[in-house]
Length: 373
Image (tube, rainbow, N blue to C red):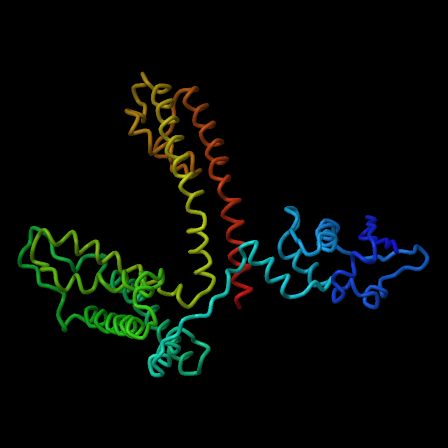
């Protein structure tokens, strides 16, 4: 009862009773696997991935334990499992085990019928044509708000020109209905506020809604408008706060991530790689401090040196490590030039290390996004 299996030139041997443990699979069903039988060689031939087949054969031998080889990409391994017909349950369990999809939980819905209908309108664009139209309108309002902010800075010639000067207490406040930019701000923020409140009051869990990442982004985009209304722009100590709040309006662009799965993947990828990014920042900090100290003492004594102190050299080191190189500061001594070259090489290596982890997390999350779709 010995069975010989040829997978792309590599010979595997097993017993028929081993394969019969899973009779619904391709190898476990004699009728299914007979189409791959080669009588002249007395073997079954499959032009498939060798490394993946080793794991699949072990699945039969171990009576149901499946583990993906490290050198086989998840997409390829999934295709092999589908080819050998191990079953959708096995694929789903493998994706959960690998972290590509999460354990499915029944989504919590509002109990009130009207509340549930309104919630689906805002949270599920594909639930109806009206919900789709609502999403299109929301995207239009977000884009219009961003474009308006850009146009306002262009027309005024200066982004913050409409804010009063701290030394000029007689400057006319821009917050009146005669100002078209202020009217547009009112219109946009009224819609954003209404949308946020509807989502909040129809949410099945108010606490979960407030902690949602996308909802926090919405709140950050809305609050600056109301804070500016409360502040007295004639007060000199409010001018700085007003300027900062005006800049915060750019966070409106992140509201688009609610309607774009790709943007969400990038955001979650950053969160997944937060430890690696933290390590990168630490490495950059240590490299900047060490290289700045070495460059400062290497250039010490030069009358025309740009490196007048270690902190002053931080800017040059950061430019060199990140391979920007503005050219506003340059080393003058041979030793300084040598250290600068070493700094650039080490910086390129340092920046490349976390990229592999970031790309790996992105591929995993992007694949999960495809599975969810």
